[in-house]
Amino acid sequence: MNREIQNLHNVWLNTKSSEITELPQISFNNLTNSIINTGPFYYYIIDFYDMSLSNISPTIYEIHGFNPDTVIFNDILNAIHPDDLNFVINAEKAMEDFFYKNLGINKLLKYKMSYSFRMRLKNDKYALINHQALILTMDSNGKPGKSLNIHTNIDHLSNLNTYKMSLIGLNGEPSYLNLSLDKENQDLREFSKREIDIIKLISNGQNNNQIAENLFISPFTVKKHRKNILAKSDSKNTTQLIKNCILRGLI
Image (cartoon, rainbow, N blue to C red; front, side):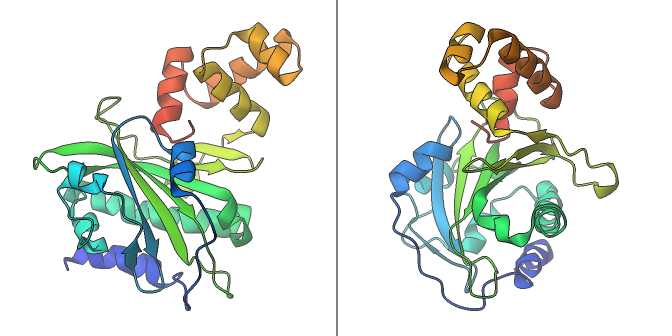
């Protein structure tokens, strides 16, 4: 194991589960369909108790050439571009810190974590991959147990990494996009549930009047929300908004 991969394991060492946790009754097809990005993807569950993998989707072979029956976690970690490993280490640290200082560790089950990095593909070329993690279980000490990780090839959308992270709120929780790893200059751009609803309706091709009718608000209110959404997402227009939100795992 090289030093960078060991450093990544060390990040999880302090927060990993101290006991085996049981998976809830979930449908993986429904769950992954609800949170993945557009593009080729695979998923797996990582158990932080012993770093073992389960429920590995067969498409991991199509993307990385890994046999889903024999692949281990370090195989996946070793596919990360060497120049992006430090970012991944710092992103994992920053996610943990953000929860402890801003949201509370009890909110872990209510958020999807997302950031991107380059990974080596089956053809030995590198592509930008969006990483999404959804904590499924926590142990009796409030530490992460199992996590559903989804990796989507988004190289067709962008091959330039922003080196930012996002926290997508579930079940009405606010979302935070484009978070910098620099705590001193971290700009907390909070997206409300209403704003997220509007973004999703925009991505479905609805205009202001249609969105207003669906959400039982006025077209003027929708227009005001759209203006705020564009500013928060660093987008100049709707097309760029949709692209940015896909890249950050919001839709």
